[in-house]
Amino acid sequence: MNVIYNATNIILFLGAVQGIILGLVLLTKSKRNRMANRILALILFFFSGSISLHALAHSLSIPVLTDYHPLIIGIGLINFGPLFFLYIQSLTKPDFTFNRYQLIHFIPFGLILFAVVMVSLIFPGSEYENRFQEAIFLGVFVLSPAYIAASIPLFSRFSRRIKQNYSSIEKMDLSWIRFLLFCFVSILVMIVLIHLFTEDEHIGDYVWILTSIVIYLMGYFGLVQPEIFSGNLNQFGQETSISQKKYQKSTLTDSMAESCYRKLKAVMASKQLFLNSDLTLPVLAEELNFSTHHLSQVINERTGQSFYDYINSRRIATAKEQLLNPKNDHLGIAAIGFDVGFNSLSVFNKAFKKHARMTPSQYRNKA
Image 1 (cartoon, rainbow, N blue to C red):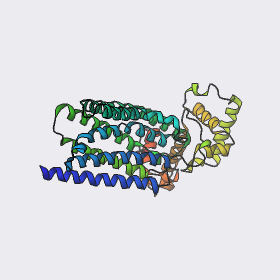
Image 2 (cartoon, rainbow, N blue to C red; image 1 turned 120 degrees about the vertical axis):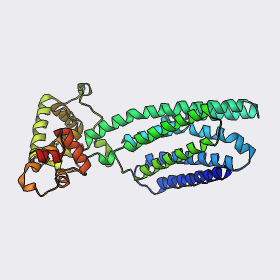
Image 3 (cartoon, one colour; image 1 turned 60 degrees about the horizontal axis):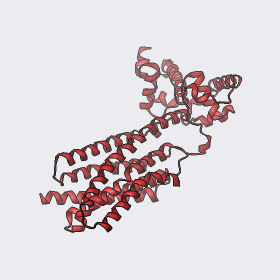
Image 4 (cartoon, rainbow, N blue to C red; image 1 turned 180 degrees about the vertical axis):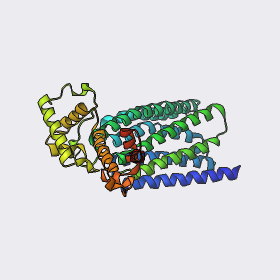
């Protein structure tokens, strides 16, 4: 068994070192998503430190380290929820900046740290320390799920926002974070079950290994995640929906809306800007000489679609014409998809099926 535990500690140490290295890379090498990468690096440092401390406590027979490492780890993990929430904000909000008001998220950490220090000074070696340890880990299991739950609505708002401003969103896909959220929740459940139904402390080693894997996957995806919001962020319209409530205070008149919509259809027919895979709402608004907010409102109200769906519907209509044209029989499905503005075959197939209720291949064969 000692051999197994030693091997486990080696794995944990290696994982911790990799996490620290990855965190340093995020801080020094990556020029994209700088604020997001800084927050993600802090998360990696917290977990790498916790993993190292856990492994050291089980490798070295140092009473102080053995007795207090759960307390220190628990205090550190209190920060995971707020940091993860801020990380999601930094990815999904183009105007995100870290300011003093966001320090309120770390008040529980400060209060708990102050309480632990005071109890240790006033009642050294007392039973209060064990009670504090239980209270801290209870705080971890309350705060972390709460912040994870608060992060979920950010995804839906992010999805609406990018669909109002971009015609191609495959590079902005944050589904990997949803997967990691599921992993974190699963790990929390595992920890609770282990705490309730077993007293074997070494089972926790495997939870730490799983946690380290998830954390480093998160670090890797954060490193390769392209810049989502680039350029002049002030160009982009506010988050909108097709709901009329969003436009109750709009300055757009009926005549302006009609003029904008006529011009939009004319430009789409003559210049076919939708064939540009990188077309964005600000680019189209500049072409029409309208504000992004008014153009987004016109598209929403006149077509019942977001900017993303409207542009893709034009692309799909053109793709249908090309699929039915005998001159294009020598072209593959992917070639036609790229020609009409899609960046990948999978996205083309998905969009085509959404609009035509069948795949491009089925459409061509049926015709």
